[in-house]
Length: 393
Image (cartoon, rainbow, N blue to C red; front, side, top):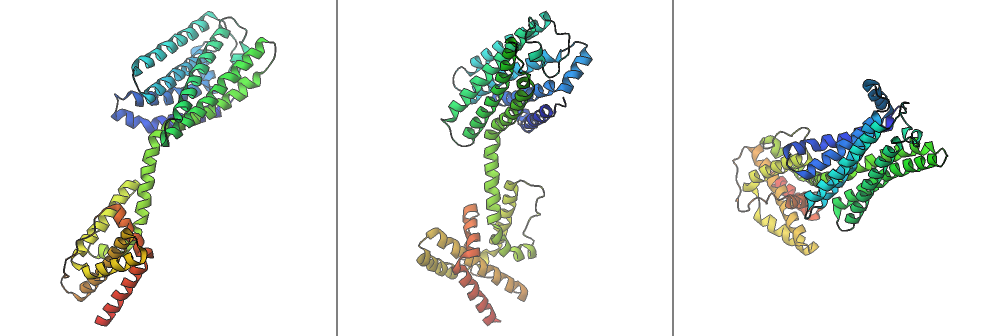
């Protein structure tokens, strides 16, 4: 009677709605976004209205025994229609708006039928958890129950078939979302089927109330979670993939930033690190710092060292890209060491300036950072630079 499953399911769905609400505010004319938000909002409302404490509150405030039942059934019916409209807009194609209107009109008629049946029927005894089986033989109330269950089962069944059928023709995050949505609607179908079986058993003189009070809420709760995930995955998945890619690049650039750390700090070339920033912003910050340092080192890059290291690495690895990265890493190590030595001696900036700084392309910078970490040719260049500096001193 606590309604914990209902309230948790409602919270999950409305959390998804909160995630999408800013997008809807920015793109109010997008029917697809509207459909997503309506599905999430109505699904959460179904669980909220179906919780036993909420049922008791609605009945007590209204003064009408079991008024919460038709309200819940109407929200479930509207959710079924919204799910179909979402699938229609998701798939696109010709006659989208006409097909969506047909679903809306059809299920609006179902809602009117639910209201009419409740007004014509008589349900004086409040039932918070087992109304469907308790009033399964009551005229008009029984028709109301069957009407909403059949309408709900039809909607989720069509949604399941459409989602799983479409999933076979697409790939990536969209396919993952469609499969998850299809499994979620299968669970929602379990909600309707278990209740219909309990009602049919009551017609046959048997008591299968646990299907109504135990199995159906559990199926609905699991279906709500999977539905919310299925709707949000195609939208959040690409963004999550981009963030993961940016974070991976950000971490892989760390060795190059560490190599330039002294120069960045001493010359104040590093921008303040953004706090609570997205991976995209952090990557841009690190790239900018590295680019500032490399541009400052432009006067110190040694073309001869660069070309010799590139030839040695190309001969040793046979990989032109790796050789290029190793050559740049060696040039960066030598230039940073030379610049630091001249700064300590108080000498002005010098060098031939005959080698422009490497391009700020993330892939190129990652290659240089990895060469700094594991290339034997860069290690050899470090040793040569250290010996040269020692001999000079």
